[in-house]
Image 1 (cartoon, rainbow, N blue to C red):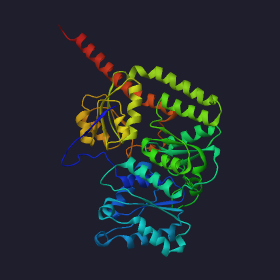
Image 2 (image 1 turned 90 degrees about the vertical axis):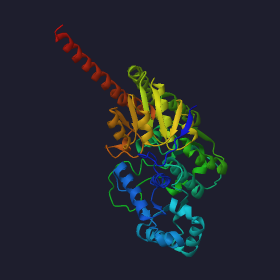
Image 3 (image 1 turned 60 degrees about the vertical axis):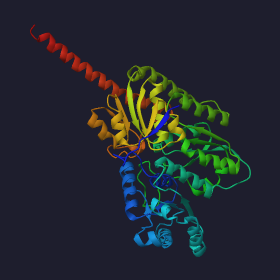
Image 4 (image 1 turned 135 degrees about the horizontal axis):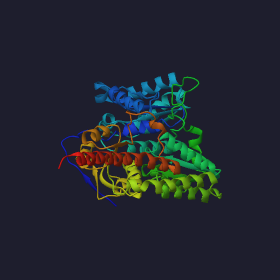
Length: 448
């Protein structure tokens, strides 16, 4: 277990952290017919929108209550009511997710009370779910906001229903999973004859497909009707420690047992996941999955030579940091520098001596002499300055295409990750060999 160190600075230099409201808004994108809304100033919402669009390269529905100087002082009830009514009239969403901000949280807005008054005054909102997520952006980070949103959705929508469907399972997906990762999880669960309800499901809303018609809300995602019946599932899988509270809430309310998977990248964690599915379904592992496992084992044998002894520096949100760092250690690398955004259980489980709660400046100071830097798009500049190869992971990734289709979970995802990172190390070795051969040639031709 790692120790955590908080760096004290007068300011954040080259920030790593993304805010809680941004993480909550991203989670709400995984609900069908949803309109996420930030109870904040227009500039706050515009900045979040830019990051989401640049990462996913898709049309992102995101609204704002447009708080100004007057409403900040006197209260934002009127702004909230007007925004909800405008969105309901124009977009006809099934869900409106209201994420608070540092502005409204610091003032002490009673958003829950405001929503009760708004609903009581407007009968036309009877069929629209209004979900409030408390996400002050002066604490926590992207994963914390995501987890808060998933818990709020469960709290508002999951119903206590009689009986259990022995073929239905809940999948609480974490912020560190891409749409491709979520799709891999879904296909694996279905291969065992089980019916998953995935919350949130970005694999249906932000997977980069072209719609047949314009939709003003989220395009695809988990249906409200499916969320309401999650209490009838036979089990809940929390894929990430930051979504465990949501799974525990379902367990407390409906008696659905929970299994927590802190990571799904690598041979052993996916083995555990597959074994859990086999146990619940009562079916043997399908041959196709067994073959992919064999391919991963072969990839480990092929690639571990190039990972052994490599020093890696990583900057990422806690659950993502845990998954990548443990995968690299399993392959024989050493985590020389680990930087994350907040102290969590996941951060304390990262293999390494110390995990720094800091920014990308701390990454730059600790990554000198490393063989690889793993971080989001902002961290690439650090790698360029240090002359160290980089591997992109996390949010945002705006300097490359296909962020939504990056696969790192399951046997296939781990196999591809070995090849992708292993090829970076292999290129380093080839470059050194080439320089060595050139040096040797010049030395041989030089006069004595």
